[in-house]
Length: 312
Image 1 (cartoon, rainbow, N blue to C red):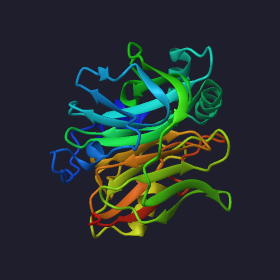
Image 2 (image 1 turned 90 degrees about the vertical axis):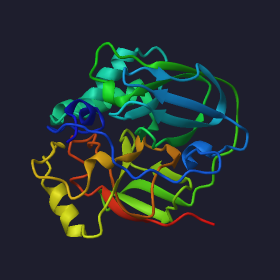
Image 3 (image 1 turned 180 degrees about the horizontal axis):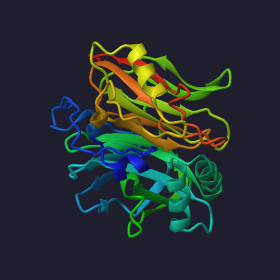
Image 4 (image 1 turned 120 degrees about the vertical axis):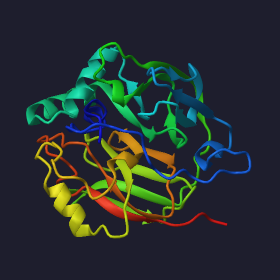
């Protein structure tokens, strides 16, 4: 079951309990590292981030501006949900933390007010979900200035704080070339995902937020068994509370298998390398609407994608 403290800050509140992720481990390369860890960016702008059971986040304090790849791993059996944000000038960590926590509540007015405060406090620059032995990476274009690295799963801990990352210098660097682009957007006024290209095991995937200004979105992948149908998924997501409260019925997929992109602000994009294996996945956005606080997944912001085998 999913631990309430973690899912509450992973863009939804639930009444379940989190256990160790059971995603099948990816193949390793000749160096013994997973594809996400062994991937390189042309100019070498790569940072290694790790978290442990005590919540400590180990990360560099400085990096060059431009395209930066964050390789993320954890030894915490409960996993790590490592996010990146760029605060507006003068915004305090506690102001940001409070606004972000309200966006994932299940009370509509709190969600709307928190979303408005978050939009003025900081830009959400994505991040990724990791579990022991299942590293992932994300690549972002960073502008000079202060950035915060933090664990979404610990946002409800008043003692938890961010890791400050100072970005400096001219913007340079190249982005990994993705095999597919997943876009969150409104289609006929409804939140949807659109996929272009072919998601491929071990290869980069771009996630783009093309939603209206102020609407943060995320893309979390869950592996599907062969027997799960589109009707099964629709029935499950239709049973959610209007403002994102999880139903008491079990999901038609394993909620312990989540990996993907944590929230990015509207107009932003991130490139990911995820421990996905060949097969079907459902991609879910657990965020809520900034306009009325309604659950985006209940409104249809989920899609089924087919991940192909590794390229030769």
